[in-house]
Image (cartoon, rainbow, N blue to C red):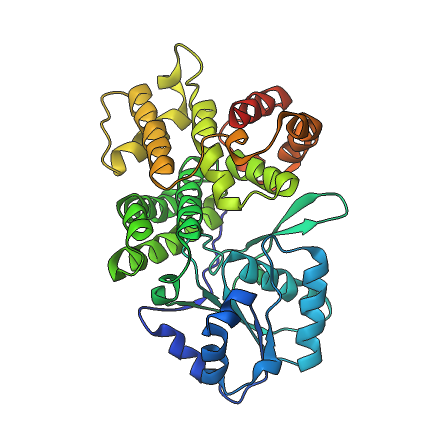
Length: 375
């Protein structure tokens, strides 16, 4: 028996942030980052809800930590808030997910509203978050249906002003979510439907959103792709691309979407057996990747060739988005990489995402992938 929770109320479209007005007069805590305060979005949100700056915690940084979760919990409790609004990218929403879980452990239930301002993480609909334990330099994935936001507001106009690099990184995160969900061990007809639509939307719109960020259609389609990919991996799981990205992010502070983009072609090659001369056509994951290639309109004369076209398409897209091919191109030197290599491998094998990967790797497999990523 399987189950899938979809308890979030969804509000979407241009101007949908106005739905926050329904909470006017309530005890609200807004968790966000400094950029949302600087660009006035946080003020707009509090204005709709009739609360002041004292209701805003705007210290969220990339890669939420256990310490920051504790700080946010204390802030919410100090306001005696009944409603917590996460406003921002994946870091803000992921932090509030952990806050919700901690507060539940204390017997306190808050109404959780997620308002994403980037199109990438899908965190507004998932039961998943990642929190960094700074003391050991490791990211800890958490999964619990109680962390799913009660309401998700998808106002794509909020994504129009994000930097091009953020559009690129978060967009590649969408593609990684959809592809990993499509080949994951728990993939089903339900998750496939979400993943396939997310792939079509993301491949058709990401480059346009990157080049022309002020246009409505690509921004709206990327936000919907992010949401659908989130639904897909909530049902199916992810894989070692995310496991490796978590470890690389913890070790070198690489933005998550960028780490995914660099890693994904190598993971597809591993899962499909592209480094093996024959036998790829017999790999179930290779067949799935080939089908994904067909979905986005790539030539598909045979399984192996289709997978190769998919890898090439991802590499070309990374190039168009200004994403480097290797860790060396990010400025990571050989000595630092060698020093952290064993720890990264250990983290990947322990990461919860690895269990859903279609091919279970050992330390040797992960090491070979890392060496290719390093360049």
